[in-house]
Amino acid sequence: MAPGRIVFLNGTSSSGKSSIARELLHILDDGLFFHMAVDDFNAMRSRRELGAEELDAALRRTRMGFHRSIAAMAEAGNDIVVDHVLSEPWRLLDCLAVLRPEDVLFVGVHCPLDELTRRELARGDRPPGLAAHQYDLVHSHGDYDLECDTSSAGARECAQQIKEFLPRRPTPTAFTRLRRRLLSGSRER
Image 1 (cartoon, rainbow, N blue to C red):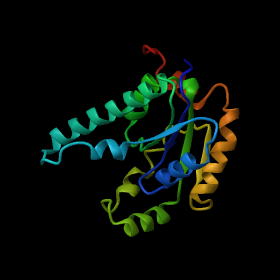
Image 2: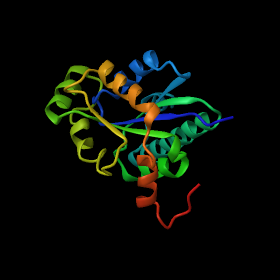
Image 3: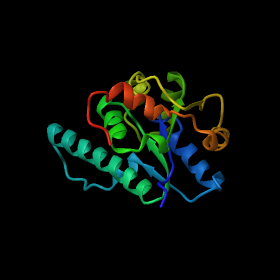
Image 4: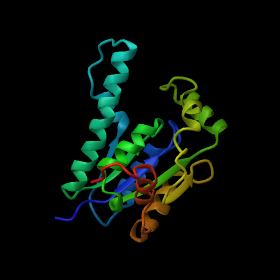
């Protein structure tokens, strides 16, 4: 069985990743895609109060489990749309270590900070300043296969761009290039 394709959307909170993912599920017609979002994994845990150190450890384990769940779904032949925030360097490194780089279309989802702030306030379900905190971190690796800006294009338009680009993924992929650059000297799969 051939491994599944992974459309990996990375951007700050409120950048439009989930909206793009929902649109992709409607328009991608050359396979059966599953939307896997890091927020959904966070929502699965119990709600008891945790101290800062315990919470940090739990969130790290959750994200590591999320990455391995993506890999397992793709390895079983499922096509995946991933919705993630790579706001800590180790998250990208872990994804590079566990995902087959040739199967990943890495998409940068951008939006100007003033618009992110406006969206965050309108949503009301995120801590104020979260997107601003993540803004310089999520794209710091500097390499994507495709990038979109949700301030100038709607979710449907971004999804259409991704759909048209998917069959002509570059070789090597951004994940392959990043793996070579960031994991050189370490053991790769």
